Structures are given as structure tokens and as C-alpha cells.
Length: 155
Image (tube, rainbow, N blue to C red; front, side, top):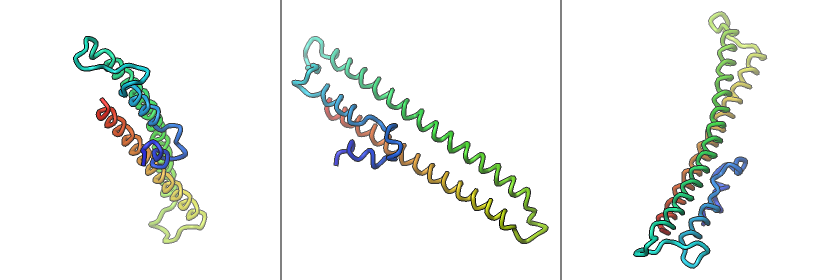
């Protein structure tokens, strides 16, 4: 199956707008490296052998770099969001622990249990977000690898 068709599923569907523009870049590589297309490719032994290929490589590098920066900004933003949530949850746990002096009593009030339960749910949700971010990054990394492989194959 074509990776461009499965990138959306391999990544996180809700974050699809932040995925690498895989099909667009793949098409750019294909068009610029296929003979009889609108732009000429370099022909070995010709006088301007490297010019067309060099221009294409510069264009491809600029596009890949822009995509990488865009994806990196999203990942940094998401990881910062998760980090802030975890710091807030840590403060809540410390505060709850201060209010419960376990040495003096062997029981916890129902209200305190509910607070701990809410914190636990939030921690589990943060863990799911970390897993989602990891899945997203893995899908993007694979997309970059596949594009570079196509470039090497077609040039």
C-alpha cells in the first residue's frame, strides 16, 4: 500500500493538518526526476549537467526543511503542553499529600479519594498524549525516510 494513503492512519488523525505533505513532495520528486516532464533533468555528459539537478536539490532541500520546521514547531508545542500539564499535576499531588498526614490516620476521606482519582485520570490522559505524540513523530520520521529513499531511487 502507498505510504501517502496510510500516513493519516499511521499518524494521529486529529493532527492531520500537521503531517508532512508527503504526496506533494513525492510528486515534486517524481516530476523533477522523470524524463519528458515540464522541467528538464540533467543529462550526464552535457555541458549544463549539474545545473538542473542542483536547482532541484536546492528546491527539495528548502521544501523538506520548511516541512521539518513546521512539524518540529508542532511537536515542541505539544510536548510543552504535556510538560505543563504534568507539572501542574505534580503540584496537585504534592498539595494533596500535604493535606493527608498518613502517619496519624489510616484512612482517607471520600473527598480526598475523589481528588486523587481525578489526578490519576489526568495523569493517564497525559500518558496517552505522550504515546500519541510518539506515534505522530514516528509516522513523520518514516515519511521523511521514504521520501529520501524515493529521491535516491529516482535520481
